[in-house]
Image (cartoon, rainbow over all chains, first blue to last red; front, side, top):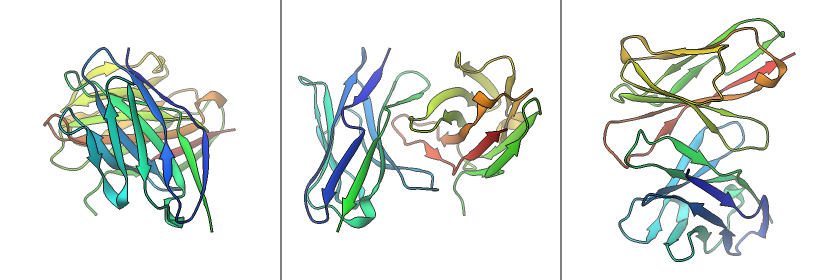
Length: 114
Length: 114
């Protein structure tokens, strides 16, 4: 069975400092991996996705993630946090050969202080 | 707005009552998913439709839950004899037929069972 583990339930940063949200995956297939963001009272929005092309994936709002097969990791980074980045972030894996059910991690809440 | 819509956005009901939620996917998307998100957790897969056919159901979907997608357009999720444990956010997502595309999520229906 496929799964993802988000290593931190909460991450606190100051505005303008780097962001690192950690995710490890477990998959018997060559995985498709995603990061979704959920702002309060808003729907889930895709930040970026990895689908076996380039291992460094760039997403929206300056976020990027690197797929490392040897470490089974897919960490999300951003060079400089903005107040508007405060939200819940989910690392997600899907089966590209099945019906693409998404399996979510438990989420990391990003707090950004002025 | 051409995104995924869900109705109602909030539902408060008493234990034992039946409730029905509706999801309208993006019009050209033939795949539709239901997920459930409880407080502090990531969304969990409930069921999947391709056009009007329900092709997969999670073990989370007890006999009190039923989902339909008549004519392969909108979908409904019904919960009979609601229990307090059914309190959650119910999310709908849709996807076009191509692989590796993102699932677009609706804003969700928040159910509170008193």
